[in-house]
Image (cartoon, rainbow, N blue to C red; front, side):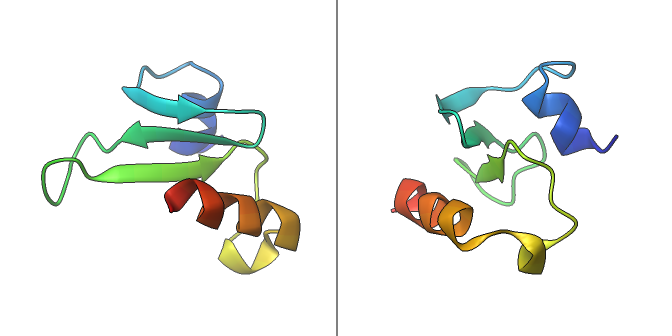
Length: 64
């Protein structure tokens, strides 16, 4: 299980900014700059190219 799965499952604490049934948005613990935010899908995907279109569209909508 990778670190993002552990964060999604609340096994590792995070500073959550937003969460819904598809994604969790939280601050990076090692930010490149103040406010560095990660948007992570709750369903596990192998890589970016494995994400289905509906989930990817939702991620972009949340990011906007």
